Amino acid sequence: QVQLVESGGDLVQAGGSLRLSCAASGIIFNIHNMAWYRQAPGKQRELVAGITILGSRNYVDSVRGRFTISRDNAKNTVYLQMNSLKPEDTAVYYCHAGRVAGTRSYDYWGQGTQVTVSS
Image (cartoon, rainbow, N blue to C red; front, side):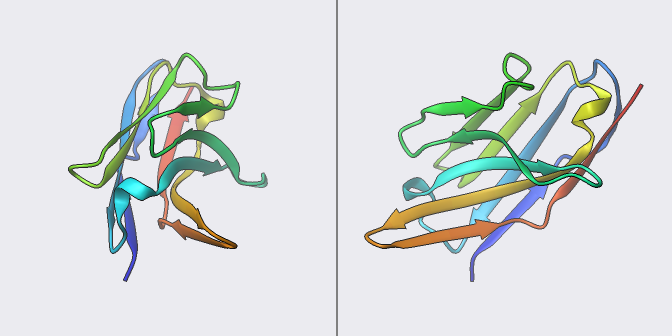
């Protein structure tokens, strides 16, 4: 059974920092690309940051320079370090694991962790 368990969400003041973690089980972690998505109330879920199996990173423009995604394959965990937080970063943050094998794609989601940034 695949599980992605996020943690680290909290209420923080603008300008503060948080570190989200996502612990994976039930998958071969180091062959999955990992990503963080977020969904704010009334908005669509958006990709925040991704990291490939080779360690290449990408970010949505609104967080580039403030957020850092990283992975620890030995711990089957992906992290999102969030600095200089803004009220517009308020959302539920979801961890995603994915890979493509031939014509099949595999996608797994965590349950989400709430991040609230007060002004």
